[in-house]
Image (cartoon, rainbow, N blue to C red; front, side):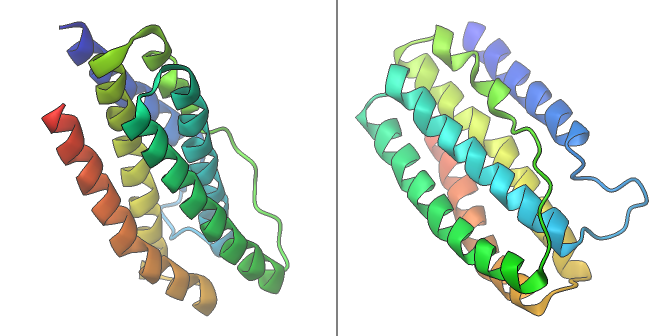
Length: 168
């Protein structure tokens, strides 16, 4: 029962943070290249916070997965820096939804593993939605190509996280 409450709180907390980070534009316009770059950097920071969380409570499985995701984020950030330099703009720094991981720190074993995967799902969904909205009216060809390349990978990863969480 405690795990179910934890998962629900993670979803609610992540949704509230996503709403407050500016991912949704108030005028319902498509996000700009800067919005997308900022969102992807925030997603990378979230993945880094997952890795840091696994140092304390994670088993080998979640530690390896978190390390792999951070490595992928570093590659993504390198490409984003090139696109950002070509655009000549600075992305906005915003808070990540790492607050959703406060609960796993107080749990151990299988409860931590389930919460680890549950924390990822809303972040992936938010990032996927951001890329999909951007691709409806992209303002930079290089970033649009990059977003199209990232979407299948992110969709696959969120499905894997959902299946793994259900198995745990």
